[in-house]
Amino acid sequence: MTDIVFLLLIFFMLTVSSVTPQALLIDLPLSNNADILLPQVNVMITADLTYYVDHQKTTREQLEGLLQQKLNTAQRFVLLQVDRSVPIAHMIYVADIAASLHAKVAVATQPDL
Image: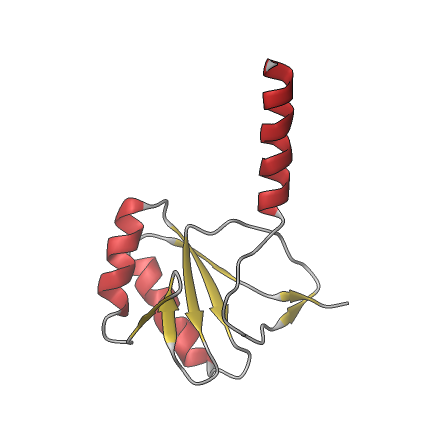
């Protein structure tokens, strides 16, 4: 019985790690090298410069406070999902906030086939 539970646990761990949740339509940049990560805090910037933190819409002014609140309850890891049409300054703005909160930052990409 313990073996079955252990095997189920391994199965769910492997299948969950291969799925990256993405509810919003974001055209991610392409990359040849990609790792699959489970983020603790998702920050999305859509093509119309709308900010989302864990699928919760927020403004640029409220972003730092919300990130600080989320990073206090989770591990210090932020995944940026930024539409490729968004100017790089917006991504750097979020990365600077995360770095000031001592969080690791990763950028989501699509595999380049």
